[in-house]
Length: 76
Image (cartoon, rainbow, N blue to C red; front, top):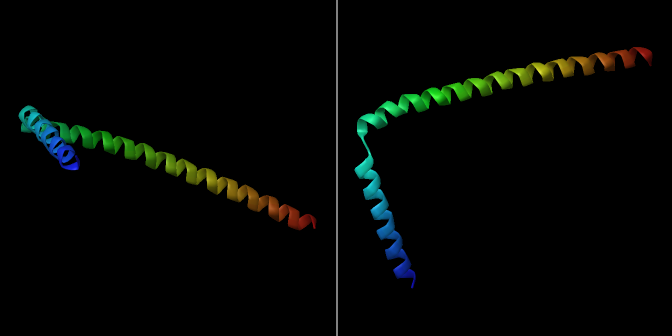
């Protein structure tokens, strides 16, 4: 039973790969890579911008907390 399943899986996989190979156009694929990379760059720039905003926010929070501790220290 397991061998039958493996054979069916191999046949289906082979047929799917053959269909994909038949439809692939190397020039179109090469043209798509820069588009994908551009999208990835845009996504990474957005993530970097958000990370910098988070860092600035954390620094302000730290400074605020530090100032309140200093005030509390002066009162005590």
